[in-house]
Image (cartoon, rainbow, N blue to C red; front, side):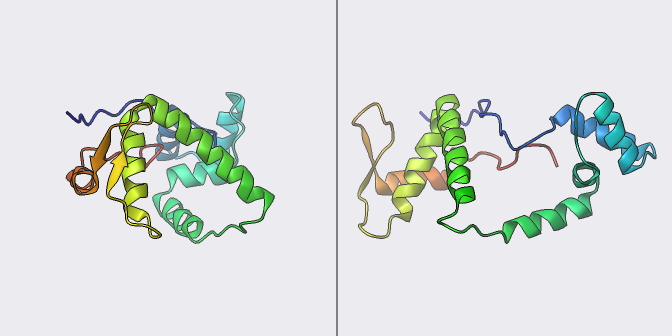
Length: 156
């Protein structure tokens, strides 16, 4: 009944580069070009990126450190930045749900399992129908890995 098919997710608007750009930057770096030379090369191709972006995608240690730093970031709940971030994330989630209904099913199951105020006994797995799944069956489906998706936007 459940297939593990990865459909094309919505484009993440935070990224300035594509996987092809990353591959090209890595090749240029491996051939001995400086970070600045690579940034200039990309600018010649109408890709305005900083040397920091080149370092991030071509230096594994730098990328690891930046990701650790980003993981510690916290947002003020009342800030305009947080409201924009939530809107951006919700828009992307809607696009991803439209592209892959199993992502929405996973999201609904995880939300039901995380509910703390009132224990859930079933989960509505499809917003367009009244069909519900027993919470124990939903937990088993989630734990089976059939709804897993890779949590990355580009190849590391």
